[in-house]
Length: 253
Image 1 (cartoon, rainbow, N blue to C red):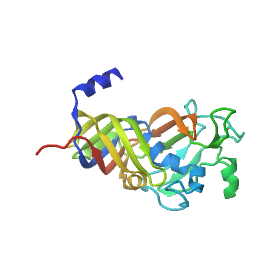
Image 2 (cartoon, helix red, strand yellow):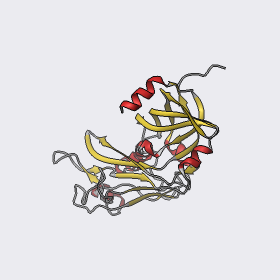
Image 3 (cartoon, one colour):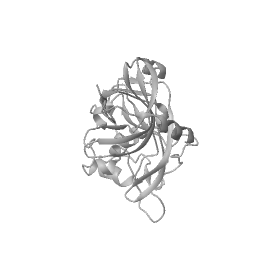
Image 4 (cartoon, rainbow, N blue to C red):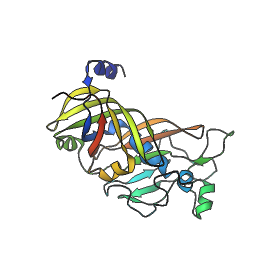
């Protein structure tokens, strides 16, 4: 954190405009958690508060994208053996090669749809009621080496670390800060930049991703929903988005 802070002090302000963006696996899955994860929680989907409501079986992402939620992973922050309703944990395939397969359910939302709970009924403590929550949510790695993805970009931005952000689950629009970013010029990393902000629409970005790395990086945190916080982990490989709006400083001609 100290090294990153000192590096950003000397970095110039990020350029603004539309450009290719490479999300490093070190960014830790913030994008997947916010841009699609919450939208796949069944209570939000059933209430029409998710952009993914009533889209089971439809294409919601690039064919390169497969998303799973897996509380059975060993020694991860979002792992558990049973959820808070006593349902055994399981690996849930949410999106397979771009096609939406199912939502994350607790017992109540599962009963409403006539399906089995996915073991995602979680609560902060005995004082709260269980609700559908993510555990360890990740985009499955692809086959491309991360360095090949960077080499494919003539001019763009590498996001190495994500900062805070917000997403509207109803329409999927998001805004994320970049805490550590670098320019990409002619396929190589150039100087660091500061003050970059990513703006876009989650479903649209997921459909536009055209390269997926063979690596995987985890981020950890505490996810808040309905006044409850639960431990989670998020993960993603290196991803290339052909065009994304980057907020920064207007470059002078």
